[in-house]
Length: 243
View 1 (spheres, rainbow, N blue to C red):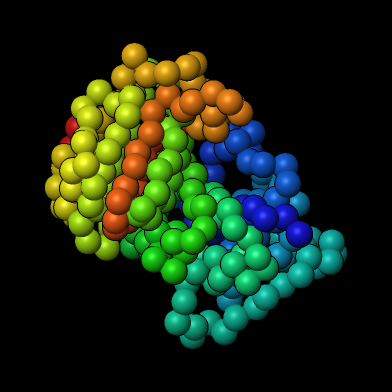
View 2: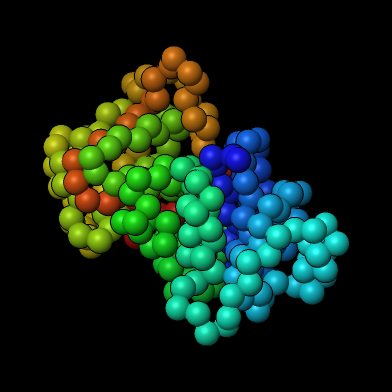
């Protein structure tokens, strides 16, 4: 059984460049209409989860023809399809969870996007390695105490956003504006739009883990709390002005 679950989320479109950043040894779980996206990306789906109210009939028929296992839930469920997919991954012993999704360019659902982020950052997943690809952005979920590497090129934007309360004892390396055992509180903009320092160690490539034996260009350590470490243009793109 693969220890990495790639969870393809329904809703918006997915940047196809993300496929190159997914590990080969993986279990692919589609959350409802995430099945359509997974098939468009050429991913072989190992499990379909959800109430199946938004998946296309053609994708569902193809999955049936392939013998894809289906874990169907009632429409009046209490959990979102994303939460159900995360639960399925944990129940199958996956310790590395990678979400793949994106916003709808023509019909944005802010509630859906926030729900996805909060599901992946749930305290119940603190013992798992969790990350999320959302459009061109790469999000690492860090629960304290812990450290995550940031392997991104010089000048790359990195934002630190606390969730569920204050993030305590943040220490960064390789970022232009360092934090040294300092807190960030929810609602504060202090962690927004930091950047990888040109003096950071080693050559980096956006979105890829550091090579074995080579230190990451930058890192974030957290003593307590929950922190989202966001590289908003990990797959490339044009940065927006600060909000």
